Length: 598
Image 1 (cartoon, rainbow, N blue to C red):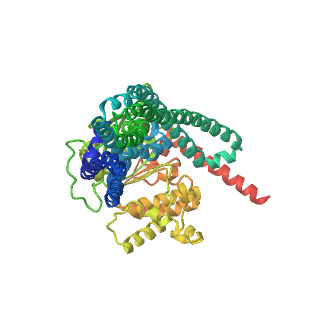
Image 2 (spheres, helix red, strand yellow):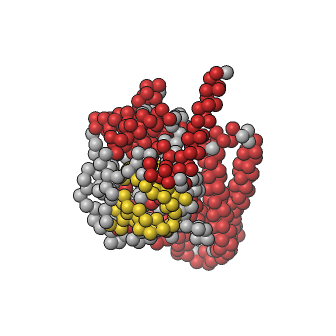
Image 3 (cartoon, one colour):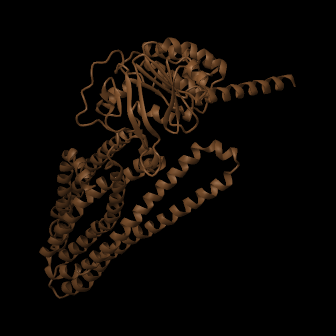
């Protein structure tokens, strides 16, 4: 954790070095101020002429102004460096999340990750700003002030410093408790952020089942728990400065009792006594900061521990050290030959269960259209997800253009594939921005506009777009909430078509589309599929009846393969699925006709 933080500090070392230099200068002026006041008071006590007294008073004012100026620059330099590290760390954290595979997001909650990226990073920034500033500044201020006090009167200084060991004991006890307390608060914030995110995302379900009251009670319980954790932390954070703030007052008592007697007995002059009072008063600020510093450091280290917990995880799917250099692609990357060789696959963390896929041997030539069908849970989506390497496969079990998929750089592999997942996801932006999401940034605006319209036409979106308030520029809302299920599927299909990749993987893309629209899309896709390698996962058998090859999966195994006519005549699982779906269609048509007649 500290090694990672140190790398960021070294990256911004220039600002920190200048900040430390300004801090040391501030500490020097800090120690000089009471001496300058002593000099001015001595002029009054000794009855110096008015011009001399005025000169010394101007010196006091000059030192005060210089102290404020140096303090300002020290804080600006260190705070700017802390903001810069926060900026770099947040970008690195997000980039790390982008590198993590989908299996990572099955175990890590969105709200927790959001809390680490916002709340925890803020605490780290305070540690690197106010925290580091006071780590460098406070000890120097204490040492210089105590040194000057020893110079003025060693015996009185010993009396004033008697409470310091008490401070060390207090700091040690509070430090352990504050670390555990601040870590609990940050974890509570993460839990509440996750709950809030889930409830907002699932608001339609909450309202549909009328469970607003129960959901509110669950959130209130979570909020109460966070409140209690925060109150425990607040009591500790408030108690530390309060106790450390008593130490200068004890020192002031010693000055009045011991120093007063010394002054009355002639062992100390009035100017020295006055300077001692000022030094003791000046010590109250670094001692107070020392107490607050423990709070900042403990909270910051607890937060950095949570951030480092994520950054320390290595992506399960990454370019192999010996990954081959990307080849110059034909219009979009790989040529499109796909081969599964005795492939077996288990999802991470499910070692006790049977494999999701077993003994899959399948070759898809370049330019072929392959349909994958089977009952629910057969492994269709899993098989499709392995092609763009969303999940990791063992060496040698999946090859692309004769190369092991694990040896192909991820950028080359995924730039060559347009993948439409079963659950289409749209971002909270305009429809045209969603369709153009996978296009290269180097494309001109005119070319992007052309591709978006072309893909929208092929996905049968044009008629729907005419009914939208701003056409393609209509904001679709979070997760595409402004669109119907079928429109979201067609928008996701259009996004894949606009990419013009050599390999197209469609995972049950048209399940929410009506039969008439699906037929029109299929007509367009015949032209688009030409020259591409296409894998179509379908829940409806009719969707893939014109494919060059149809593969039937059941319980993770290939149980049949062939073309539609052969499989329909074979009387196996494919034929049974075909009959059941045709019967369902006839029944649905009959019910629709009956409803229309009424």
